[in-house]
Every structure is written in C-alpha cells, then in structure tokens.
Length: 112
Length: 111
Image 1 (spheres, rainbow over the protein chains, first blue to last red):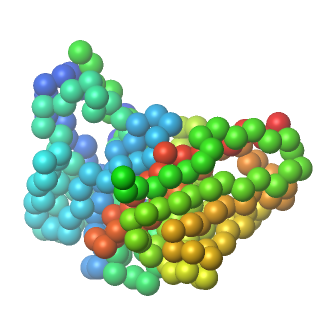
Image 2: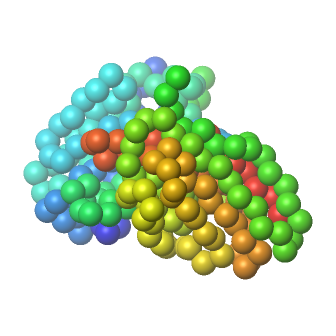
C-alpha cells in the first residue's frame, strides 16, 4: 500500500480557502486517492475520491497533478464546523481486498 | 433510515473478560471492516469481511475475533488475550464506489 505524508496540523481563519496537500510518491497505477474527515469521537466521513486531474463535489475539490505523486484537498470558505482531522488515503480499489491505511491525518483548526 | 449502527457507545469491562461489540448495517453492502483508534492516532485495521461467512485478518488482529453469519452484522469480540484493549472501535461498510461508511464508534474502557 502506498504511504502518504500530510502536515500534522493547519490553522485557518473562517471564510478562507484551505488547501491540504498529501504526498504519495510511490502511488501505483491502479491506486485511487480518497479523503476523509473525522470529528472527535465520531467515525470518519468520506469527502472525495479521485484518480487524476480535478474532481469537485458540493463539499470540496481534489487536485491531482499529472505525475500523481501528490494531491491537494481544497475546502472553499471554511467555517468553524470544518474543524476536524482530514485523512488522505491511497489504495487500489479494484483489488480483491481493498484496505485503507489511515495515517495520523491533518488536524485543521478554523479560527473565528 | 439507512446507515451503520454500533452499540453500545460506551462500554466498561474488567480485565480478563471477553466483550463483544455490535455492528449492524442496512446499506446492503457486502464488505465490512473493523478499526481501532487510539488517542491522537489514525485508524488501524483489525478485521475485514468481503462476504458472508468469510473474513480476513487486518494489521492488528491478535486478541480479537469476528464472525459474519449475516450480511447485515459483523460483531467484534475483544478477548482477554488483547493486551491493550482500551480504545475507540469503529466499524465500516464499503459502498459500490469503494468509499467506506463508518458507524458512530464504541469507546471501550478496560480496567
């Protein structure tokens, strides 16, 4: 499974756009990139998933450069409720046993 | 109301006792997972099941056991052989696009 590296923590003011970058230098051809959000004492929540270029949904955007060795989760105009831990995961979702390796994630603190 | 339920939310046990954590889903998902989370850490995979009556060990299966007799249910037993059982336990099921849906978790404290 590809290893990922993310910043341990980030701070942002309300209303700003936040970009969290994840490094995955040994990503394999079949690997997809998935981001999850976790609030304290709750289970993680799926945010977005992508393979290459850009993916956007109602919550976030995911930017993946051509070499796919990194990805950036973009949260537009964050609010206090976006304070959470964000996990970047990489894995082959077409494998017979799809397993996710959750690192420590990035703790995002949104400041009023 | 579809989703994954885990019960109980908090569980207290004495050292040396086995304890079973419940996980139920009504999403009609085939694959289900159990994770453990320690304070300030990410999730670690304990067991997973791709289909009824089949399950595989994850990274930290020692001291745990599971069963998958029904598609909807994937209970986890924390045995007395687990050396550090106090943790937050999360169950998940996997959707058609391979995203995982997590339950609310069970916080187990063993003293």
